[in-house]
Structure formats: C-alpha cells, structure tokens
Image (cartoon, rainbow, N blue to C red; front, side, top):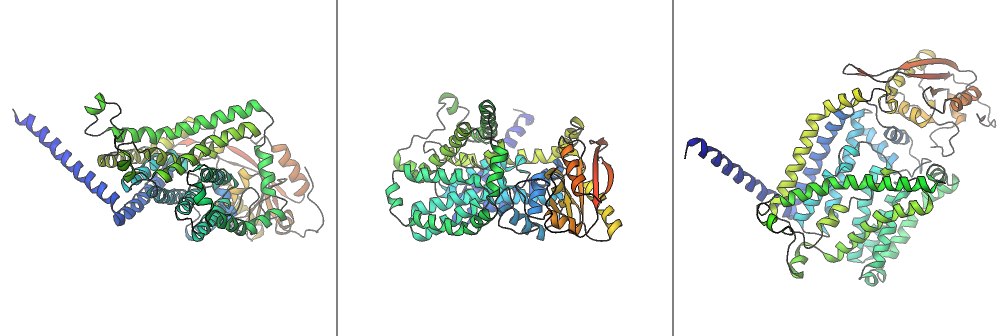
Length: 551
C-alpha cells in the first residue's frame, strides 16, 4: 500500500473523529439542563445576526417593505389601535426605533430579533413535549423553515405572531399540566397579548379550545380553575382595546370586511388552493432537510437500504415515554391539525380572500408535531447533521446574497413596487419643505404605499394621512393636516391616480404643484423611473366644521 493510499484514509479517520467529538459535545450540551438553554439562545442569536446581514445584502437595491414602514409610522404615536390592526406591533416598532436608528438594516434586525425570540419560545414548548435532544432538533428545523429566514424579512403583525402565538401555546401547555389559577392567569394574559397583535390569532385560540375539549384528560382541565381564570383574565386585559373598538365604530372589523370579503366562489377556491400549495411548499424545506439529517447516519448506508423503516424506533411504551410526553404531544397534534385545516375550510365557506401570508404564524408547530412521533428514531449524530445543514445553507446564502440582489434587479428592472426610489423622494420633499417654510414637515397625504415610506425615510417623519380611507390609523386628521400644512403625493403609475388627483384638487386648493421623477441605480442597473405629482400645501388656518370634500 502506497503513502498516497494511506494518507486519505488517515485524513478521513481524523475527520470522522472530529465529527464524532463535535456531535458528542452538541448532544451533551443540548441534553444538559443549564447548557441547553445557552446553546439555544446562542443558536438563535447567531441565526438572527447572520440572517440580518443576509437580508441587508439581499434587499440592498430596495426600500423597506410597505408593512415595515407602516409599523414604524404606527410606533410614532402609541394608541390602543391603528385602524387596520390592534396596537402591539406598532408599540414594539416604536420602542425598537427609540433604541436603534431609523435605517433599513434596523428593520431587518427587528424582524430577525422577532424570529430569534420565536425560536427560543419554540424550544420551551418542545421541552414540555419531547426530550432535550429532540427539542433542539425542532429549533434547528424551524431555523431552516423559510418563514424563519429569507421569507421573514418584513416585520409586521403576521411576523410578530411568531412570538405571541408560541407564548400562547406555551401558556396553554403549562395550564393544562398545572391546572392552577396562576397558570390560568398566565394563559389569559398570553391570549390577550396574542389578540393585541392581530385578530387572526382567534384561529389559534379556537384550536387550543378544541384541543382542550378533545383531549382524554379534558375533564381534569375543565374542572380546574385554569380555563375559567384564563377567560376572565383575557376579557379584562382586552377591555381597553375593546372600548377603543367601540369608540371607533369597530374600524378594524370594517377593514377586514372591506378588504378580505369575496363574492366569487371560484376566486375563493383558487386562493385557498394557492394558500395550501404555498404553505406546503415552504414546510417541505425543513421536513426534507430534517429527513436527510436523520437518515445521514452510520446506519443509513446499510441498514436504511435494507430496512426503509430503520428511522422508526421499535421501542415499547415505556421507552417511548422517556422521549415523548404523549399527553402534551396529543395537544400539539390536535392544535396543528386544526389550524392547518380550519382556515382553508373557513375561507371556502365564507368566501374569504385567503392571503398566503396568513399561514406565516400557523405552522410553527409542524416540526414539533413530527419530531414528537414516538416511533421516530433520534440518534445524537442527527443533531450535528441538521446543525451542519443549517450552517452550510446560511453561509451559502450569505456568500450569494450580494450577487442575488444584483441579479434580481437586472431581471426585473421595471418592478415599481420593489425598486421605486421612494426613499429618494422622501429626502427631496423634506428639503423642499424646509426651503419654503423652515419648519418641520408634519403631514404627508397619499396612499399607504406612498405615505408610510415618506414617514420612514424623511428625517422629519411626517404623520401619514390616507385620503378617503374608512379605516384611518388615527395618527393625524385632515384638520391637523390643513392647520400644519402637508405634502400630497400622487403616483402617476398607480391606477388610482384620478381619485388621488380629485382629492388634491378639492383639499389642496392653495398647494404648489410639482412633478418629481425619481430613479434608483444599483451596481450600474437602473430601476424604474417614476413620476410623482406633488402638492405642497402651506400651513394655514383651518375652519372647524368643514368636512372633507369627497373626490
């Protein structure tokens, strides 16, 4: 045997020994009560930081998403609601940007910080259902779920649900196990926190209620004070927001009915099928990669080829109980099945406009539901494999992200919604206002797609006013706009241009009209040139009692 033949074998042996040592350390850390917590926190932090840099690169040619700018605008004024949604997402954005600068990178950091918290809470949920080794496996599976990486780039109420809904599930599992008044108090507060994020969480609250009623131990839970204390606590905690809803003529409910109601059954069916297909495709990513990590083990080359069910453990009930809490696993299975099936069925029955993004918050339990299958065989090397897969995928995305950003813009140069230079327009309008009035630009009037980006990118952060919108955010009013002066903006590429122009003609009578064209250039690639019709309305005295003139 030659030296050339010996050296590769020696290198392979050394590599294999290193892998085994790392795998042993990782499994030991994940299984340790104290080290496990820091391992998960460190992993979540590393995931958040790396994906923040990836998103900064991927979105370098774009302004922040409209939802992100809207959340920032809400956070400028702490209210009990913002027209479209309950207030929690706006409050958190407001607090975040009192600490961090108003910059694109900070929005991606906020999104990833939200998802990092979600990973840690998902681990705490998993500990009540499976052993520590499986719990860490669940966390890494979630980190590979596209919702927790490149699809999670925009902070909005949907994304924030990946913190509040896991907290709700965790509180329910705790209350179901402890069945005490204190546990019920925490469950009620968690439910209120979730509802203050978005009313869509009623789907999860309903699923938890169904799980409590279907579980074999339901009478133990229902006869305890926990569920009843939870209900009372939820109602009391929600009372300020409910009073706000009443005072605003249930504006948020009006918004949901106006925007998401459909009259076409055919269109509803198409949207539901799209919702199902989209979310199944996203879930396939972590499920397939987890299967690879489980199968990629010493037994896989021989045993797995001979016995395709080798990943299924043949342990008896006692052995299975050591790694899976069957009672709590049943809760997870029921909840996940209900939130997977219920919304599409509801969308069909009530002809609802089903957005694919509504699935963002409803499938975070799927990895746990699968890992909690008692017959699943979980070797310690699987932790190393799935963590290695996550690291390779993440570093590859980091390396490729600048090239992807350039390529996407080159392939889609006329994407006005993605590459329109709204940040440039905000800076130019701020300078124009200061040159004329030497005061702060206080109000911007325009569609949500225009107004909120102006709020985010202008150093003055003017309050957005959306003309003719029935579900006003309450951040400003027409009276205040006319008193302080405002800049009205109409997008000439928007089909709503005639409506916008009519409103400006009626309400910006003394305005100075301008036409401004903006265009973004990124690595030599031009974005779309967009012309904006601008109406600079000077401050003036507004006579109370004169209603807004309709377009």
